[in-house]
Length: 268
Image (cartoon, rainbow, N blue to C red; front, side):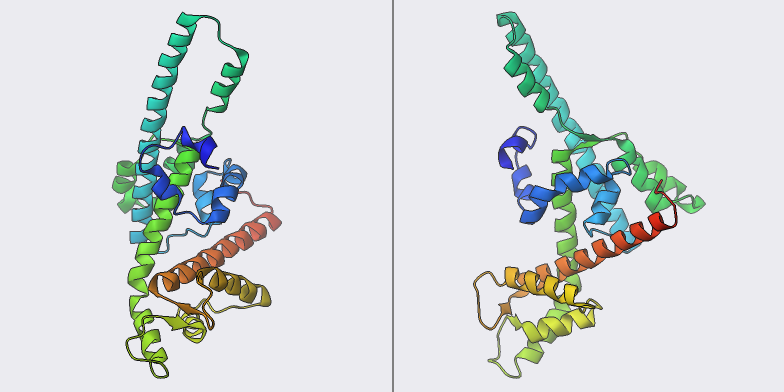
C-alpha cells in the first residue's frame, strides 16, 4: 500500500507507518470506514487501543491532537502545491481528463472534528465541573485524513508499547528467575511455560479454544527465528503481551457493541 499513500505522508512518516502490524496496513482503512460515522475514536477502540487510566487517556489525547494538527498542516501544504501545479498547467494549455482523474484520487478521506477532536473530549472529560477547564484546553477544530490516521495509529501503538515495556519489566525478570532454575544462569530469554505463567499473572490467560489458537498464532509469529522449543527475548515478550491485550480489548469492545445493538441502543 506504499504507493497510494506516498503522496500524503511526509518525511519521517514511513517509520511510524511501518510500525503497524502487516494486517493493519491492509485492513485499517475498512475498519476506519466502518466507524467513520461514529468517530475515529471508535476505530481506535475496535483495534484494542483502549486507555485504561486517566494518565493514559491524557497521553493518548495529546497524541491524537498532535496528529490532527500535523495532518492538517500536511494537507494544507499539499493543497498549496496542487494549486500551484494547476495554475502552471492551466497557463500551459488544456488539462487532460486523465490528469483530472489522478488529482481527484489524491483527495484524502477526512475525519472531522467530531471524530478525533471534540468527540474524544466528551468521552474522556464528560460533564464533570472539575474537568471543564481541561476540556476547554483540549478543544480543537483539527481533522485527520486516512493517511494521518495510519500515522496516528502508529504513534498510539508505540506509546502503548513503551508503557507496557515499563509495566512488565518486573514480570519478565520473575519469569527469567523461574526459567534459570533449569537453564544456564544469565539467560535473557523465556519459553512457552514462562509466557503462559505471565499471561495468567496479568489476567489474560486463554478462556476458550479460540483464544488458545489466537495466542499460539501470536507466539509462532513472535518466534521469527523458528527456535524449538520456542524462546522469546524481552522485546518479543512485550510484543506478544501487548497484542494479546489489544485482541482481548477489541473482542470486549465488539461484544459490548453487539449487546448495545441487541438492546436497541445506538452510539452517539
